[in-house]
Amino acid sequence: MMLPIENNQTFLLFFHGLDSSNETSKYTCINRQPKYCQTVDYRNHFKEIFTIYDELIQQKIAEYPQVVLAGHSLGGWFANHFAHKYNLRALLIAPCINPSEALADRIPEVANMDLSFDTTNPQKTYVMIESDDERLDVAVARQTLVNLPENWEIEYYKGGHHRIARADEIWYYLNDLCDDPIVWIDDAEIYGED
Image 1: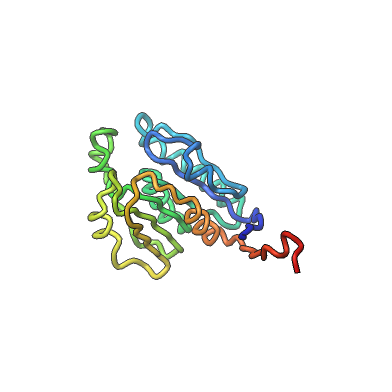
Image 2: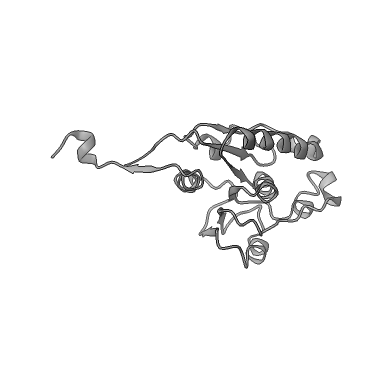
């Protein structure tokens, strides 16, 4: 059995996907404090989101020795963008690789924006992708996520879907990124057996 030890030295900021919220299972499965996810309307306030997140991240960098970013889908793109900008660790769950193309029909203002997917962040970065993701072009992801820095790790899972319901893996990666120590407790200790 694994039990995490609380670590208040790391702030975790999670970016939800398009039309999602801070109630997404990928966020609520994270049992750690301090963590934060703001519900954002990407469709109507896309350009303003950059300023909102910039200010929040700068504030948290000033308050905590370490800030870790995580995100799913469009939120994965944002997590990657700000991880590069501020040289932070990140977990990217089924990240949107090219919002300018993938979301132009759903968020018209992104069509004319340069929203490239950088892959040069030297900080520890984990990427989770499922091969049967119906929203993410897995072939584009495989072409983009090459020649990565040493601290990047890409995990391609067989099957699945865009929602990625892998709470144990998410927890494991975030535990590592946040430097939370893991304590292994033997069942015999729990039940008082010799």
